[in-house]
Image 1 (cartoon, chains in turn green, brown):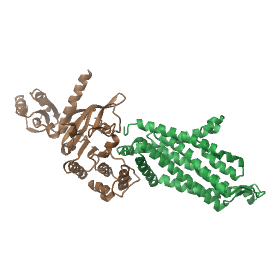
Image 2 (tube, chains in turn brown, orange; image 1 turned 90 degrees about the vertical axis):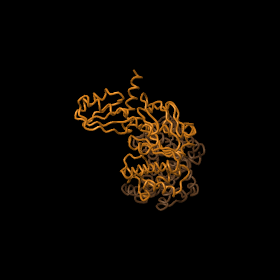
Image 3 (tube, chains in turn red, orange; image 1 turned 60 degrees about the vertical axis):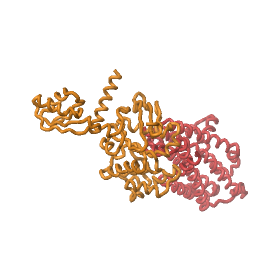
Image 4 (cartoon, chains in turn blue, purple; image 1 turned 90 degrees about the horizontal axis):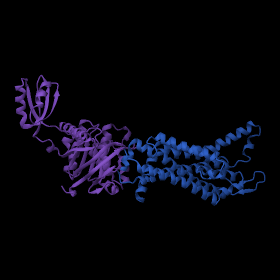
Length: 286
Length: 314
């Protein structure tokens, strides 16, 4: 089974690389993450000038790490939308084009194909995220420089370069968990409809609904049980640390990370399980 | 015929969608090393039967044995031995023909580039192998579907309407291919078609399917029994000629045509038919005996089956 899943995953990744949308998304993510620090700086400067504070005022509390975190947050939204579109269309598009039967007359199990699609989509999303982080770091380095985070007034070092790099890496890894949940949600939607547009729309709608629910929920238990709660959190913490809010560090401590990963993976497993159940019951080509 | 000689054997195979039966109690036996035709009109249940044989849909009742093993239970072990094209070809439009075949082959463990080219060459697509699938005509897509079915050198090849959408030269290529697969390579080929002539010229055996049931099965030659003949009668009064013909012993069916009638009857009754028509004062301009075509056989069998089904229901 492992061999078949690996072969199928390679097949799915090759298909993604051969298509325009995923490759275009990669280019756009690089552009967004790379240019966001420059654009942000320009906007801040313009804003300061317009308010009569002078060009330098905008940079007094900003540093490369805040710019990087902000750029990744922007690019992350785009990455999440790309992943939900890819996962949402993964099965529905095959069903709509008839290639699902082309695949299922080969010696593969349905669950194996779904697993391969999940791994390939999540893997592509992970690639986009890592590329976004690297591009954002490059953009931040070119604009503001990535140094130790120091108090601008007293010049005291709050976080070293190494510490910030470590938190950035940890935030990237933790963000992969909600990305997996999103993949599961997209696959579930993809198995609910043979129409890729409907499936993708459903997945995006579900994502917005859950985000809205997490946003308006007054009970912390509800928010904590939503994977979307943990999608923005890791880089918010990096941003907060770069802004010298040391207390935010707790959110990326072990319990917080474990909670984010466990909740997200539970959503991923639930979505994948639902998709497997739906695809398993389906008559192919009927 | 022993079970070991059968490549496909179904017993009571049934598929119902709600109250509608697509396949109803289908009993089918396909011997090894022949070209077997599944013949039926559109909606007769041919494609559903093929989907059931491949495990793409789950039967409501019954089972299908391929090489003596249940497809429902041993699908993964059986599929590498089966090559198929179901309901027309479907490939990735953004990949070339060669890449489609090569990558699909990789799923099953890998296929050599030479084998991909060999399959493309067999269907006349070798020089178009690097063209994107989205640019292919209907006929080229169909041929690529057949190439994909042959990719893993299967023992059993199942082709659903393989000549649909093909131009005459391509039809000849496919017919020759089917015969080559059977005669030179010893494979078993199942061909579904609503094109009666195709089954007649390509297949050794045939099962006629109507409303999800097999209404006749056997060797194509035996089903076209020379004793079960048709006679085309040219006469200026087809209506009256039909009335008279229906009263002749041994006549199975009569079809009125603009310039006469076509009469299905036992071959030795042709003279009696001629005599009765002349005695009735009808002008018989020509009386041409001919073999029963598969199309006429199909209409006869399908009609009989419907009458029997209606009688059973009542």
